[in-house]
Image (tube, rainbow, N blue to C red; front, side, top):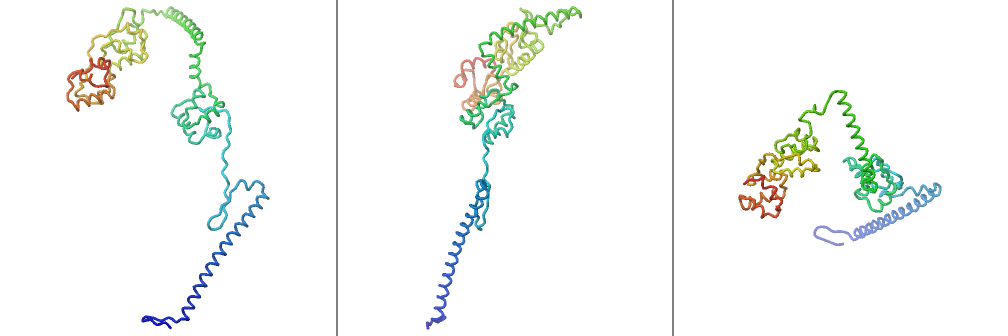
Length: 341
């Protein structure tokens, strides 16, 4: 018997406790072993059952996959079928998503096509389809023989080819002949109308009559109505002349009209400058936003002016701007009449 100050345990009790611990550990080990054996047997039985089912149903086993959860239950999942590529003729301007996906394009590529068309984009030639973002060269070469552009979309491309073809000169000559015939017919019809209704060329309002050689309009003083009397100047050019003059602050030379896009040079002999009193732009007080609005001053030049004022102070003459690398000699000549200090 073991004695202690606080308690005492009988030797027989110690043997009983030790025996119980041994039995407990042994039982746990046996249970774990049996559980593992049961899982292995169940898996073998499941595999055999699946093999038997596959034998009875033929290809049914190929279309599904079997998985086992932690609770030992089997789950059957059907494999997702990848869409097969079916190449067929298509128009990228009108094809829907189903047709585009069937061609093997990715969903995000189809979305890019839809966005391009929604923004007003048009595929005018089969080669334009190569611009699709993310389209590989291999896929483009595969789809190119199947692209068909409808006539209403390819008209501009056809005209482009026609203009650059060797036969263009012949076509152009024929068109000029047709134009001459139509003009002659129009004059004959006009003369006949004048005869019937008693109208004569002299009855045309002087404000609407085109200028004759030797007649002129004042560029800085003419409105759109007066400018439209210049041969070759219609409503659009007349408005463009007035708007550009307002942006400049007035014209200082008739040659400035050639800065308007596609302006007809044949109209220049009918235009005189008139009184030139350009509106001045103070380079020492104007803000960057005001400076860059002038047609002759871009953003970098306007920023160079404001930076110089901030670092060195007032600009005294145009020679100061000549020290800035953003201004060329031609730039300085153009802006000289429009700035003050």
